[in-house]
Length: 310
Length: 316
Image (cartoon, rainbow over the protein chains, first blue to last red):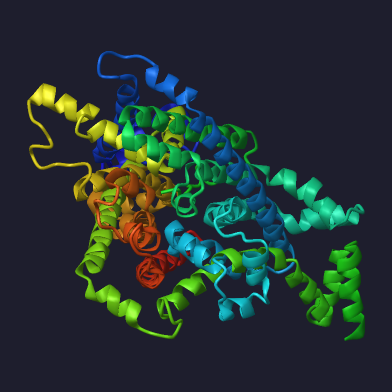
């Protein structure tokens, strides 16, 4: 690591920095140390495949043209799967925000004791990746009677699987996506709630005569908006790219279309990969732009949480 | 007890003056049971959802791994089956080694790169790199696999470039994007930016005062890192590496699209066993899944244990 001595560091520091202690970092005097080399290499590593994919998609073997993009846009499956994925993504995003936000607020306000439980529930998806969750859900709602689960759920699971027949349906897929999204939805929302003084704000709202819901919707919600936006857009971007569960449920979504195309034509698949990169780009850029405007609830580095559609 | 109960009900029914209520009840030593009850009732929708779609699937996997597919009787046959086939054990071996290799690669190189970002003084460049890292960390799954086929596949951009410039064919040299090391290269793509994003907050917790104090006491740069910097960062670094491990251990889509089943990883094997065209064996799938959960539990418990240590240092 490239660290000069602190004593020399002070002498070399730009004069403006002397008066801004926050900017003062007594490190990195040398222009190019190991850390900068690693950073440059990593950025090259991240950029080269993108450039190569763009090139590969435009290159049709005899010259460069946009024919692979034309073929994609004229494919009826493209628009159909994009719409399916959009519906799933919007459904999962709305459901996860509606489910988590009031709960996190309620826990903060009324039962901080339950926080470890929520932490645990939002940590479980780390130990239970999408493929396992999907295999479990398929068996749970397959309709074969499972006395233990029927008993534990007070008869709810048998009703859902027999009367509503939800196995392998889009609604169950949306529910699975909500679970996958929990780790990176709960944390930013909970952090935003902790960053503002929830109890004082709520009590102020109460004393001015508003009820619980009104306090939540008009006082708390506007204050934790950045956390909710970043959670929502991450969920959206994750669901748009999720393949594992959709594949197991045999629901024809955009990533499955992408996989099918890739098996026959890698050039078109490369162009599709660029399109989904642009989609991710739009989501992350919106997080950065929308969240930057209101600094409350941001992580230390304006950090964006990370989705898990691997 | 009676006024307390009444208080609790009034509190939740109208929810007008909780501050007054809370001071009063606190003086009386604790809230009423109905207040507690309504507090927990507010959690019911969320908990019910998690039970139905998160906890029950886990229970079914574990229970199913000890159940015979046909008779439904309790049995250890699924595990016997799992351990008797060399390909199953080989899948665990491949999955674990690929996760360790990519977690270490991502952890070490990404750690240095994160330090590079931390040292950057230009604000816009720093913001750009952080933003780009979040995009790259989220760019995974199927598109990533095809991006790498376009880059390092048989006719990929880099393969062709190396052939034209150095007259060396990577695929003649034994490299293949569809094999173990190819998959390592692809997984590292999402591991590196993830490491940068996870490590940056930990680096910001390093206080300049500590370095000043160490330097004043005569510590060299190396001594500072060995005695102060690294010991403080170590829990965060281990936690981050565990996150990377879990991240690549559970990854399915990337490997599936890339190798179409040519690489024997546990998630691919599970998918094959429960979703194959030939036979469907949920018992074996469940046993494999339990194996995966056990490996991941080790990683996740190390992760949480390390995070707890981090919180001590950062005084949270």
